[in-house]
Image 1: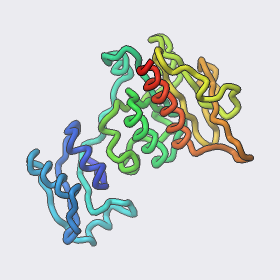
Image 2: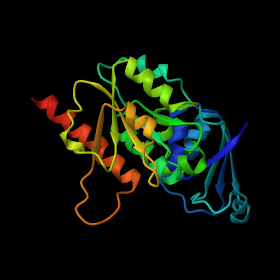
Image 3: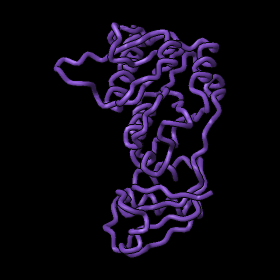
Image 4: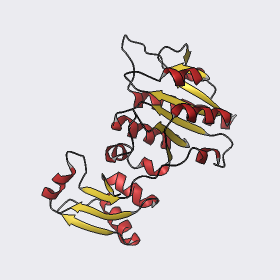
Length: 247
């Protein structure tokens, strides 16, 4: 099966990693060429990938997407098995789990932050969660090509497997008593669980969690956007790791 991805950074990152096949790249005619476009064309030449210039009107077939004049026809993203996490040659591993993040923009942003923060994988359920489509790829700015993406039929079973492999499960929950910065993220394998903005994390996963954490909300407002909350918590782990390496 073939689909498409769009956006300059997204297409460039895919070509750079080379971990999926690209059958064709379509560029908009008379588009002002910049450094990123030049890089895309050069990579296509280097890899022997067909690239074509089409008039602006033909891009209407891709719908109302922010394509930036660049579209690539690609094979679907390759999901990994959960065992790929345990096989990584790292002393401590860190994982993100999304439980019901259905907005593709949020999901893509979470994946992007996970890559930047050095996480090893993103685990998500096959139902009631966004899957990796063109919008998620664009929102991730191509980060989907730089991290293990693991889609599971049962999130509960995946959490059990992580726990059996000595992972600590850290659930974000607005009702938690502990703040996110009160957890010691160093010297352990851990998985941070993010829930949907509507319902949060399911009770089944909450009950399996070893820690429940919240981000303090200082005004009378419901909650942070899930992608923003993800960034705050992930970079607390990064901060602690950097501080720990200096001690």
